Image 1: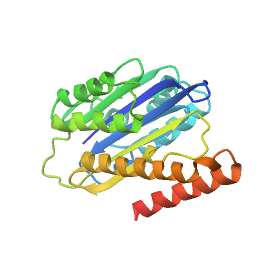
Image 2: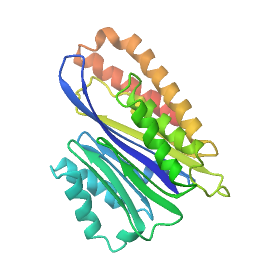
Image 3: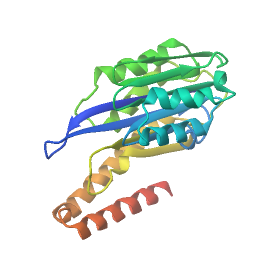
Length: 249
């Protein structure tokens, strides 16, 4: 019913410091996937799907924040889960990757991984969906576009290959999350996006990203001179949050 991608990227910030960002994106033929599947922190990204156990995502990220490796964190959670064979679970941390697809997942299901990413899906049109997601991300990994935009590109490629095969279910959803080790003055609204109920989830997620990015750029122009001042940065953050809430309404 779902396909998703988790990624890790290292980059250099404007001060010349090395940073790491993590991202996760997902789409499915059910509403509200953003509340169930994607989890991220400055220490890693996790996606939980198939017969969803939300605690695998929540606790998985908590364990990463506590210093466990992604392999140890997610495998330990699966070991304690009586329904593990019905789950798909994958993710990345600062050093490695983890992928799991239980033998009781349905339809076409499977996963793949690269040096810094994982992709998984179930109830899909076929293996080409997962391959397209991975290939599209790899072709522009660490590109100039924001990671959030490149995650939408990857979802779009999987969707074009048929995505979730249950065409009788019209109401779909999509979501993405991005976090970084970088200390920024105010968060980028386009790094936390959800489309909860639509017949065109990936197209709507792209439009939402573009509008959030445009709003962020307007705020930078308005508050750019004040970002060196703590009070000005706080005002900008409040304005960014208010804009995001208005978009959600």
